[in-house]
Length: 361
Image 1 (cartoon, helix red, strand yellow):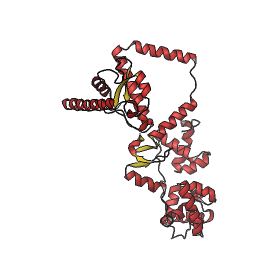
Image 2 (cartoon, one colour):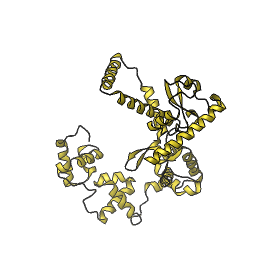
Image 3 (cartoon, one colour):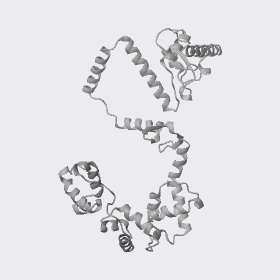
Image 4 (cartoon, one colour):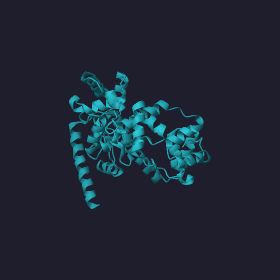
């Protein structure tokens, strides 16, 4: 509700509405927007003691006849609703119901009359490119109702598939078209869920890319005061944690960063802390290449850039130096044939150990 209107402002509207139940009438009398009147009434209907209905007045055939005569003059449903102080939908529904009885020809029918097939074909070609009726209307300077009516009438002949029909078909298959950069048709699991059966219009990959670009565009350097405050907050938080809690937090953070990196290139990773401990156990807690026992990390055997996820059959323990030397090389470019054979045996051992632990649990 607009902040300018208080409950005292709305009370005179409510009194008028009780005598003449029409949002249009109240809006015209008090010189406000009818949508504002409706929102205010819905919010304060209990305090105002009003019963909101579309039209409480009984509609007679004489009323509809008068509306029909007025429509023939003005060719506007809104003008009829405004002049007779009735609900717009009531006017539209009743005039369509008694169309033949009163010999009505609606504006959209007049706009669509005498249009050639060649003209309609041009509209269809433009719609296939833009997928927007509004853009067709703007380019050819024709009424929206005429474009909508004729394209729907000749859609089979012109080979048009409207966006709504395509969405319904994909929804039945559990899929959706991404409106983002990729423009691909993906399963609903690839889109963020908004609740009540609704999903985002862009897939998770495109949404994340857009958010990262927006964040980078609006990023500003931190002031010295902000940096000092952040350091104090981090120090205070760490001071309350035990060494074990700090280690667990770091492991979770590393796992989340690894998973996020993989998602950027469309790879799903589920490498858990248990998997990491298992790999360290299998490789003896040493760098596989140089046998160092400090500064160790888990490395992709086959690189992530090539689309290979980190799992117990694609994880090797390397020190910082060896990990940097390998970078994103394929295993054949970094290891000898003998080393590759040893790694494959260790992978088999890791897989077997994991299966045994799962069976025990």
